Image 1 (spheres, one colour):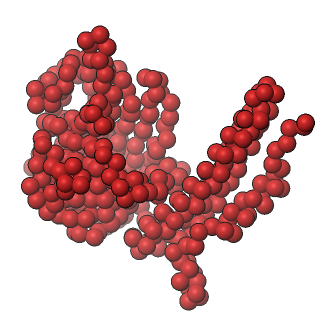
Image 2 (spheres, rainbow, N blue to C red):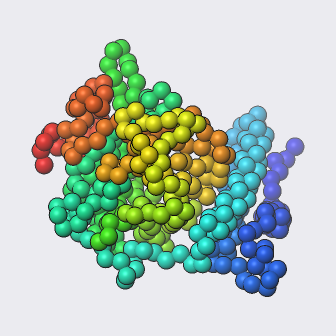
Image 3 (cartoon, rainbow, N blue to C red):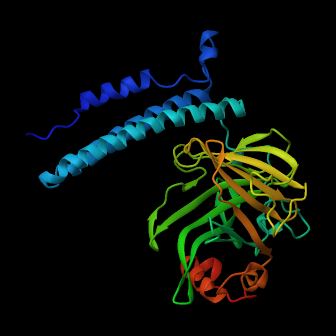
Length: 381
């Protein structure tokens, strides 16, 4: 029996049908009043079209590869490709709804890049924390600041975040380089091993009133200690990407804003839920290492690229991030990310407060992954 697949014309009809039957959008009421949809809403609709065409392209690319398999493998390969396309198409619709919800939350017409705003005064990162400009109370850009975070169901994931003394000019703004490494902790014959999961160079900037901005990131994901993916990477000013506000210095309840804007890659949104919060029992209660005690800023973060996934975060003034609680479809997943220790240099990694099993082995792994950030000797430059 000859191998059959979907023709290009059939694919166009399928995509057209999918667009025709797309979920109702948040601007239907505007249409009923003969008002044009906002740029935000039109962007959401356009991105759904892009998503559907991408799903179709992925289907045919896979089907082309299937044709070159043995006769016994071709049918199952094609079936899996069709099933994947169906899942991708459903995701396109869910992302449309999620983006429309973001439009309603932000009441946004056209998104402007804050990094290019003439009304914002950005400061030299070297002047933050030295008396000229106070650091943001929730995200410090003072070189040397280091945090150790535990995550995973059994605390078997370790994160190390350090503010380097390096900077990068992005969209005309001097941005601080902050390196964030996530590793999986395991034991083999009594020795502790640290296998890389993710390495990110984040680029942040601060303005004169203390707000911190996201200039972009280079994100690398590892599998079996091998670099596999750069998804999520973006740089403001390149490929039409724009920056955002990472966190405000003086947030207000119900404020919400974009943290990043690279369509299809980075679309995180943050909403400020409370200013004097304590983690609830349903969220697992306080971080035993750093208590909020009714003093934390509580945020809700979402990304329309991952519909249904949200994350509650807590920030303690003067300390910064202390707790993250992920949710799926409004339900807590049971996993948490907790700040374990914080300090003003990489010497922190040797501190008993951090509870790192073999600091030397961790340092060696960090040095291999990000030599510019982690290869200096303790206390060195």
